[in-house]
Image (cartoon, rainbow, N blue to C red):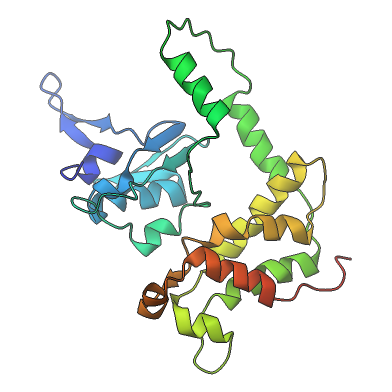
Length: 253
């Protein structure tokens, strides 16, 4: 909500009337899975309260550092329709999210199943599939997947091509892009490609893994200018042209 404060997210120190000492009242960021529903309804200062938590896995209150769960996973939704009472996420905040995924309406059969299952009496019984330590182990496994240098250079080449340069670069980037992606985009491209390779049963990353993740990794990091807006050009279209324009090395070996 628009009146949500940073302390409502990360927590605050409150005075215990019995002991006369301050104790930490933890906010919702002290968890394993955090869903920020319609995050663009909160002011930028509150949105930015997640920055330290997402990047450093800890929060600092009154000069004291409080570690967060190593399994912390942040998912946020944005309301794309209403404008009144909403605040665009700061660029630094957007850059902390690995992916931006467009959620379309479900296929008819899936939507029918949602209606069927949510309008009847449900007796839910959840069986855990993995544990928190399992997830941490999976993250370590992903980082151990090897990547050939040509694939690394291709990922970095895509990211660098998003940055407009007055003395070089791609013409359509200089025309439509105000700011391009940071090096964090290349890091997430490679990490995401490693995870994709494992889910497809491979222990090596290919160029196709990088290309498959270019849209969700780059679409919120390519900031368009007024030329793009006036011509109806979207970040997805720009990333699509980048995939057509940036050559990939001949060999992955």
